[in-house]
Image 1: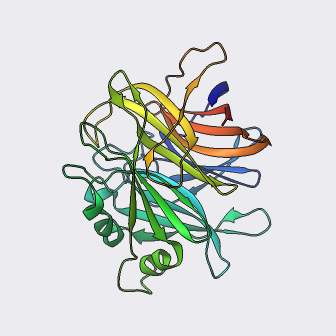
Image 2: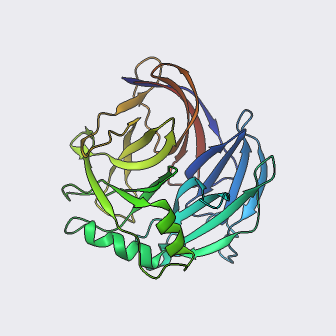
Length: 301
């Protein structure tokens, strides 16, 4: 298994990329301190549309301050049972201000964003917290949707044992609860995974996407013990999560000459499957200073 970075492209005027989803020829990206949903041409990486998810008076400097940002970290394409297709963007849940979500329907042959519908995630997140290990703070970093499930990935930092979790929720029941058509939260199944370590620091989940019946994930290593504060980035990984809980074998991202790639990967999209077990990936990164990039990488299982 290996993951090789072939190219990295800066994304000017797109701060703090945190989630990505590939829909046809469009790459949708959110930033954790931005009010916009960005739509890029997946081939050229040029931004061709930006949709406001919410209004704010705190984006005048190009980034919403850390103590005020909704911390949108999760973005996934959802195909609802009623045939509606859209993007679900979710906050991390690490603070009360970060318990917000947005549903953005995609319409027409080009799947362009329509009206934005805000969603309170407080009730759903309250149902997730009892499954966290003692001492862990809810800190969702990624989401992916299958035809039947919504998958949410918890990133736990510091010395908490067993804190990297995959929450599995029934998709129909979760959407019904979020849309207030169902009074009770859906049942939650939590799976714990052990991730690789760099210099004694464990990796934490950072991104996910569902492709060809497999859950592709990214994980990064930061030198921090706080769910809100950032730390020095030591490296990033990519791989396919096994269906059962346990140890996840991930490949560390490296340059073609073998040097470790030291960017903080925040999300992943699979551009295409080249051959059996070989994939082209689009990864987005955040340097914690407002800078963002798209990384083109090859992943071989």
